[in-house]
Image 1 (cartoon, rainbow, N blue to C red):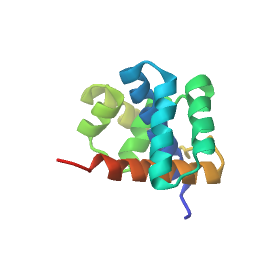
Image 2: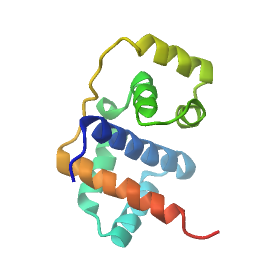
Image 3: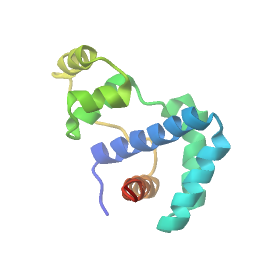
Length: 136
């Protein structure tokens, strides 16, 4: 599977927000790691790799995505203003301002992880999305 740099960085951001949102719900990093382990067992993914990535993302601010990057990438990946507002907790006016300000800036997303790690995060996000559809 070949992922563009844009898709790779967007996948990293999605995985970061998965970990962050779950951490805010449970207020416990162990629970985040346990859910990652369960999804990895169900989907036959590389648990040690994803556990390490989650630890790095949640423990080192270098991996923290900047809000302008999140807004720009979310928009580039086809998300509308309302969905971006839900993801970022920003107002639609702020999102418009960010997109208008960055419109003429040519920025290439810079993935923070290696290709195999991004591929595993991509598979994780895809599998978790499928799992969320189970039930009523």
